[in-house]
Length: 309
Length: 309
Image (cartoon, rainbow over all chains, first blue to last red):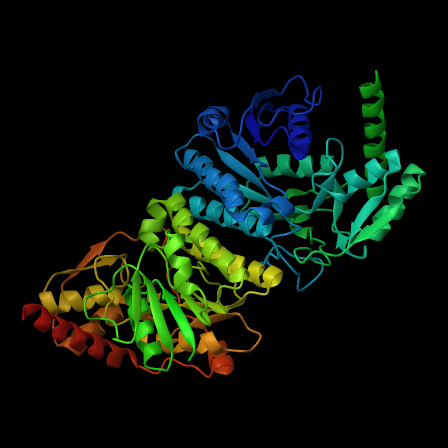
């Protein structure tokens, strides 16, 4: 049975990925912050620990066929503490890669940031070969990790893939942490709290359902071809204003908008060209935005009913 | 009088740059390791200190119109200690940029590595817009610094230029430190020691004279145009085998070759497209390779005579 470890397994993507893998015949361990109670499939073995705690992390990845690297900050936190972002994420990644170089695991799949590593795109949709001048420090540290992966591959033969994910959303995404507009919007739809739009709402992003991302990452773990870098997204742009209206339509609620000045670190448009993933992996995002939003809203509603038990 | 500080002023490029600037009407201070005795123009004020010693560095750059950032490791040292390379170079650069963001100085000119930030080139000569997948960690940390400069420009309006220098050589370049083939070759020509060729000697590089680099950097300090990234080199490729023969011709000595296996971190060809510097700065490398080699050999001979006094 193939073994893997989801590093960052307590987070939004981590929980969804670990459950997806457990349901696909993988023996899954996960490592990271504690996941939400009851979120993990019973077949997943979770080890609670910090990414900085190499002594705990390395045994978790030892002997795995694939390691998924999902650790990261958020753009706002990385910008507020750039040095801390590098220390936490880049330096600890190098410690993990050193273990991989020494043979601790077979392959590493890194979740990079399709929304930030390209910066202001010169063309839409953005192909993997586009220039990379991130407009924020979060994108720079993700990009540095991408490049170190390539160096480790060259020097040590470490097998790797990079998933430049656009804007995943779905169950377990938290609101109020800068993780994403969808979680915040659905929260506002449920509670009636006003939704804060940073800028004028014309910023366009490539939203896609987290279960689709999990499928892409699972595919990258066993991909045998020559490519290393994959855009993973829907390939479809949706403005924030359109997303608000779509959430209103899906949830049958009215959302109050509040506007804040735009931030320099945000780019106006980010939509990924996802043809490589289709060609090389046979993967495309299957879940229409409206369907993903409805599922996530249903999940939130169930959660709140459980919380109220 | 325009004021500047050469950070890394004790090194090979730093000494040449500081002297060039002092001779061009700049009030020059330099900061870094102690330069070779007698190397600095009397008008240059040198402050000895480590790049890590922010308390000493920041007063040296305070109030400068331009700061030249020449700090770096070598490819071999960066590969042997990647985390130390990031800590020494990237993190301390962020501390310097924070001072710039707060208004400590007017502009920063960063000497990046035209020989490593591109990795294995897809076209020769390499334009500034080429893809950047470094084959070594030295190139990754230089690239990360480039991107942070762009982020600081975007967020704080910090004025910056990046010089992607190819392979400068000239007086004060040290041999035996991985700084460059020319210094090692000229040393071997003088002493009769054998020269070690890593690989088969077909690796092609873009060698140019350090005084030309100093002129380019001085130009970048006052450049007012929109470009930020500049290849700085001769634009001409010379194989290591051809360089050995040229040094033999210039010095009228025979050099004994020894061969070592090639390294994974070295790319086979690196020649820069330098048209942007010509167009935007009116700069081209003026010194033919043969002339630069002869001048450097003369300088070495004079040094040894002085050392023998």
